[in-house]
Length: 123
Length: 108
Image 1 (cartoon, rainbow over the protein chains, first blue to last red):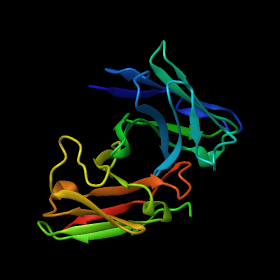
Image 2 (spheres, each protein chain N blue to C red):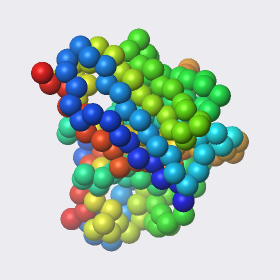
Image 3 (cartoon, each protein chain N blue to C red):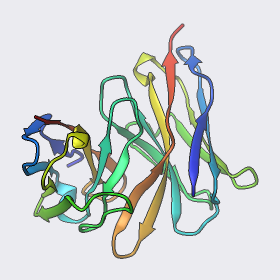
Image 4 (cartoon, each protein chain N blue to C red):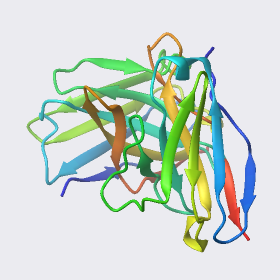
């Protein structure tokens, strides 16, 4: 079955760029009808959608983060990545990657999630 | 509107029925999906589409929708259903996804 695994530094300094990678196993990021997304959750708070990418490179982002976010995909490595620039302590969170499935009749669903990785922004 | 509103906390007696609601303008046009999250774990999809459950999700979980309100109902709540529940849908313009603030369910 498809599994997702986040990886990247657990500590980032303020004003620097947070970079995370999600590795997909048991499936392909190039599969039609699936999108690949990032979501985050600050400690003790709710979930926040960051953005998604399709294997063609098409992206959409949360407007509140759009100016600082870049999501990319590497089909040769079966991975997709998140870059968040100019981070502050408010960006401290657990970052999840997720697969988004789409069906004409049932719409979109974030059906498979990685375990998440904690990223702390601190000097 | 760019918000999905959920009650912060709800409680239910063991074996009873509980409804968790989610309000937002986008729900007039788009399905809500529902996620269960237990402490220290990743969210799990429990409902998608009009009222579909992924494989492995018990049939005591169901969904409904009316106007700008979507609901998740647990019929015969079990102790293992104690968790945070999040709704998610599109904003009213359909440009991006939103999560509700989450509802913490206590099973008494």
